[in-house]
Image 1 (cartoon, rainbow, N blue to C red):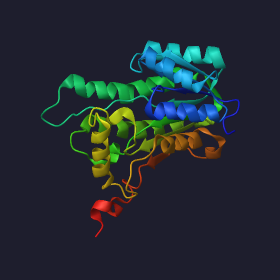
Image 2: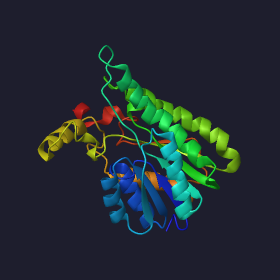
Image 3: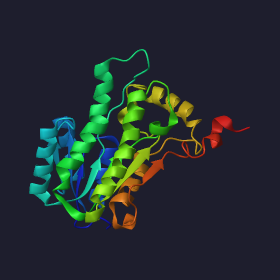
Image 4: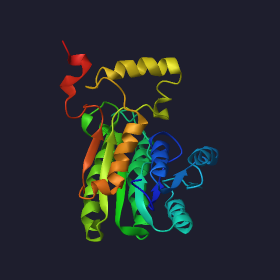
Length: 257
């Protein structure tokens, strides 16, 4: 077990990549605290995770709630070895058609809340701990309509490097995992039915060199790697889990003769 005797905090851990990662962490021996805004969904997630997990209601943008969540996790399981700052949101923010509150809500959740999650946790981290921030391929792709989201995720990358510099004296590692299109509930607004999702996935997969969406487990395994001692000399890095979208876009099915 790669995380035996380790403790972890995962924000936004009640669904999608966060919950999948929590399940993998528990299976690898960790004790895990997950946070989320919806108590019912948290309770369901904890029931799936078993006795080595707790759920704490906390909105990531509420700094006091985040500090409280960290305190409860430490009270239950002891000092932290892993923080996965996973919680985030997206929104359509085109130039010429975006309200200030929508733009700022994305930045508040994806940048400000991530910083203060780490700040709340840092005094409770064991030396040699691992912090993983959730980025995105959108930070480099220039997708129309996603200025706020792209800026926030590019900011995550830059912020991770600063944090890595500051925390290196304690041997605390700070890295970023940046997923591409992944089969999670995040697409429910775009494709609300299984049929709609299948059509959407088929169309978007034409732009992915490996020709498919990622599975949540594939992203979670990358987070596990960064959280574990297997990544003991990886610091300030960003790993894209995107089927080649950012590194080899010309290899996508849409461009094949």
